[in-house]
Length: 380
Ligand SMILES: Nc1ncnc2c1ncn2[C@@H]1O[C@H](COP(=O)(O)OP(=O)(O)OP(=O)(O)O)[C@@H](O)[C@H]1O
Ligand SMILES: O=C(O)[C@H](O)CO
Picture (cartoon, rainbow, N blue to C red):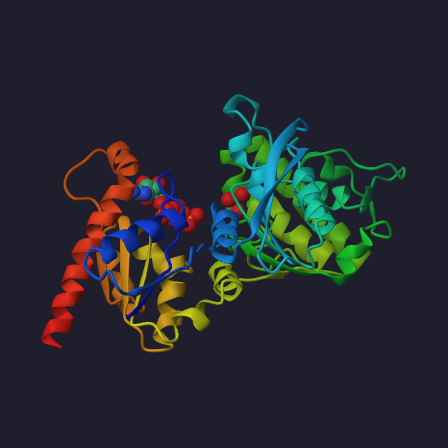
C-alpha cells in the first residue's frame, strides 16, 4: 500500500515536513508495512521555501540584504534539489514582520532587499526563479527591487530616485540597460497572495497600506504615486501591468516583476505541485493525505489541500484532509476533491496549547484515521 502525505505547514506550529512525519508515525502504528511518501507542500505563502527545500532535497542559503528601512537584515532563499530552481519569499527580505510597529512607513520602505535576494539566487546559478510575494512592509511597486538588479529609475534631473513609495512621485524616466544580463535567460514565476490590482479602491495602497503604517493621507499619496509609476512604466517600456490581478500584491511588487522582469504570475500551489512532481508521486497511490493549519470555506480558493486533492483526483485516488482547526464552512472542501476531513485537536484546549502540542495531536489523529481506513478495507 502506498500512502502519499502532502500537507502544507501549520502556521505557527509545524513545518510541512513535520506534519508529514507526524502523519506517517500515526499511520505506521496501524499500517507498519505501508510505503509512505512524504511531500511537503506550500502555496507560495510563508513556509514555501522550507517546504520546497525539504521536498526536493535542496538547501537553504542565508544572505544578508537591505531590510525594508535600509538596515541590513538576515534573509534566505532556497536552492532546490535540481540545482537550478531558486525559491524566494519576498517577505524574508522586505516583510512586515521585519519592521517594528512604530517604525512602519510605506512612504520609506523598500523592496531593495528582495532584488538583492534575486541577485544572490542568480549568483548561486539559478536559471529559474520562483518568488512568493505578500506579507510585505512595502508599497514601492518593486522599484527598490529593480534598482538592486541594476535598473535605473530617474527623476527629471537624471538622478536615481530614493527608496520607498513616497519617492515614486519623482520618477520621470526608466533605464533598464544596466539590468543584470543573466535575467534575460531566467524564467521567473511569481505566486501572489492576493489578486488586487495596483491602484484604485481595491489597489495595493488602499487595501494593504494601513497595515503597513499608512495614515489615510499617506494612502492617498501612495495610491497617486503608484498610478504615476504605472504611467511612466507604460510610457517608457510600453507595458501596461496595473490591472493584471496580482499586480497590487506586496505593495505593487507584482506589477514591478511583470513590468521589469517579464515574470509570469501563477497560482502558488500550481507552481509547487509542478516543482515537487506531485502528479508523478500520487498517480499510483492508494491514499493521499493533505492538510493545513486551518481549513475553512476559503481553502477552496487556491490553497494547498485543494491543489493536492485535485491532483489526486486526476488519478482517482482518495484524499483525506487534516487541519489544526476547521472553520464553519470547512465542509465546502468536500465538494472539491477532499473525501473526508478531520481536525487534530482532541478536546477543548487553548490555542497556545494546540499549537504547542500539534505534533502529538497529528500523530494521534493520523492513528485514528488509519484505524477507520483499515475498517473500510476489512469490509472491502
Ligand atoms: N496545530 C494547530 N492547532 C490549532 N490551530 C492551528 C494549528 N496550527 C495552525 N492553526 C491555526 O490555523 C491558522 C492558520 O494557519 P494556516 O497554516 O492555514 O495558515 P494560512 O494563513 O492559511 O497560511 P497560508 O495562506 O500562508 O497558506 C493559524 O494562525 C492557527 O490559528
Ligand atoms: O504584502 C501585501 O501587501 C499583502 O500581503 C498583499 O499582497
